[in-house]
Length: 274
Image (cartoon, rainbow, N blue to C red; front, top):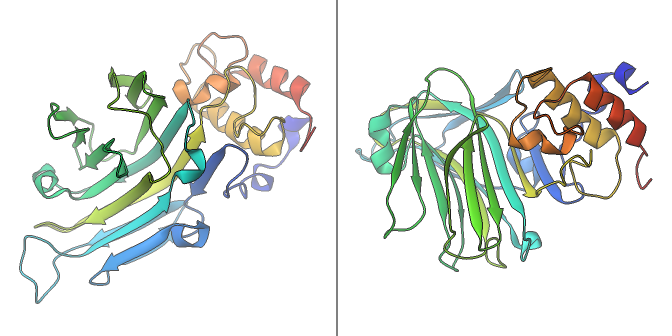
């Protein structure tokens, strides 16, 4: 029975698979293909399944501006993808006053095509910028707890932004994304104040088909998919909304992921290339 498989067996599924790229904070991001760009030697470390970045001022350079560290990679393999998502879980203790300087933490999907999705995240507020001519959104969040952010893009027809499974904003995109020059970058930065940001994971790629059990869109249902089904099951249960990232595991379309869905996943389990 799949329910007896040790979870440690599938926790190693942290590299690109199928139609999804996954980085989990069990390893440093630059060991998984992210290009690191540090300034003034900020501290970074792994602890209890989190990746930490600590930034502060950078003598002899006076503020504004201090230590920073970014990680970046190309989204070109997903050019032309009609249903694309980016999801990440993180927390920062930085002050909202730092947002003006695009600090303390940010994640941005961008490219020369002019389509940008820019999120700046502080302890208790998030700023969302799409274009200089469009309204800027400021969303208050609960402090001192991690939050899950998800952006879904449906070609040039629709974008949807979620926080912890709740729709925060949606509308008509400025154009299709990703394209051949599109990139994804996340960063911690000190503008005036020091802060610590921790990241649990960053995942992006093809939105998996609903009720398919195939999280990574590689046309089979295997142990890699089981890891994410189990994650959905752990965060949901009977009558507990599992959120948009778990639609692939909700076989009975009742918005939760429970033992009935797990049983159906077992029925569909094929193994790799099955």
